[in-house]
Length: 275
Image (cartoon, rainbow, N blue to C red; front, side):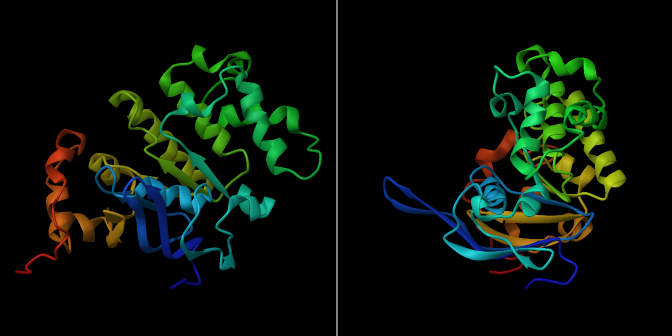
C-alpha cells in the first residue's frame, strides 16, 4: 500500500518476457516503497529480477501488471506517457557507462542532451549546465571537450552520474553502478553518491549483489529471489535477523557475492525454522 510519505511506490509489479519455452516471469507481484532521502538497496543473485524491476520503475520495460505512484500521484508505466516533470524527478545510473554514451559525442554534448529532452522551452542557462554538472561530480570543465574513450572508467561513471543529475531528480536508480570498477575507484564513486545524497536529500534505489556496498550505503534492504521480493527491512533487521533461509545463506557470502553466485542457485527461499 502507498504511504503518505513515499516518494516512489510500486504495488504488484509484474514483468514478463516471451522466451523460447514460453512466458518468463522476470518480476512477480513486487511491492515496495522508497522514502524521501533514503537509500534502498535491492539485493539478490544474478537473474533474480532486480535490474528488470529497476527498468520497470523507470518505464524502460513494459509491466504486465501493477501500479506506480510518485509522491502519491499516478506514474505511467510507459516513460513516453510520463510528464516532463515526472521524467526529471527520476534519474538512472547504468553499470556500463561507456555503452550508455554515444562515442562520437563530446562530454559537453552528452550532458546537454538531457536538457533538450526534458525541457519544454528554452533554458537561458543551458550552455552553462554541463560545466555545473561536472562540478557536482568533482570533475573540471576541461573534460567538456573530451570524448568517452579518453576517460578512465571512474571518470566515465562520474559523467554518467552527472547526466543522471541533469533533471535535478529526487530519485536516482543505480543499477550495479560500481560493479564494473576497480575497488579503489568503487570507493570514490560510493563516497560521491553518499555526498550527493546527503547534500541534496536524494533518494537512491541501489541495485547490487555486493553486500559490502549495501553495508556502507543502505538504510533499508530488499531481497529478491527468482523475480519475487522475499523480505524488506532496515539494514540491521535484514542483516542481523533475516526472515528466510535464502537471505540467511545469501548473507554468508561476504564480502562479495561474485565468488559464489553459482553456489546460491537453487537455494529455496523458505522461512528460517520451517521444516
